[in-house]
Amino acid sequence: MTESRDALVIAQLSERLRQERELFDQRKAQDRKQFFLWMVMGWTAVVLFVAICAFCGFIVLNYRDFSSGTVGAATSALLVEALGLVIAVWKIVLGNGPRDLEPTTSVVRDIDETT
Image 1: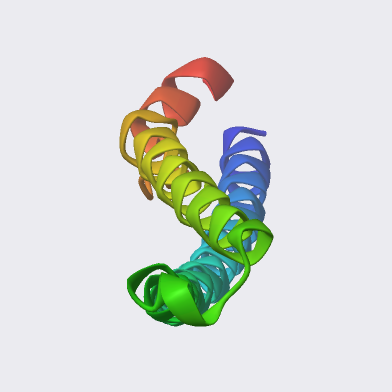
Image 2: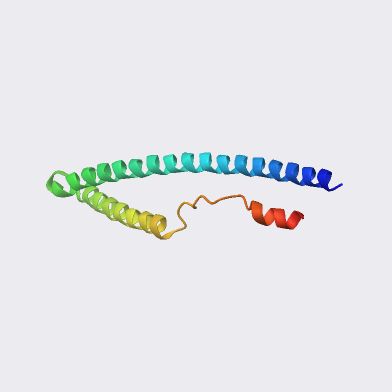
């Protein structure tokens, strides 16, 4: 009786460990993809920020060649872009950020609970 119960407990724990390993591998793959997406979005934002600042800076520095409405729009775009960057960095750095990987198993506790 005890041997069959032990075999059942071992089979259940083995299956649970297999499922937890698969779950961990899935989370690890998702975190890898999410990190890659963050890097792509971050570098895209940097490139766009530099491009917008260069374009608006050119208009502001050569204000005589453009109408006052165009210069005002370029100045506003610079302000909005800078504020957007500050807010985005603030949210990313002080926000939740990526969650840490953690073990999904607690086999010692599980064995105590099943016996």
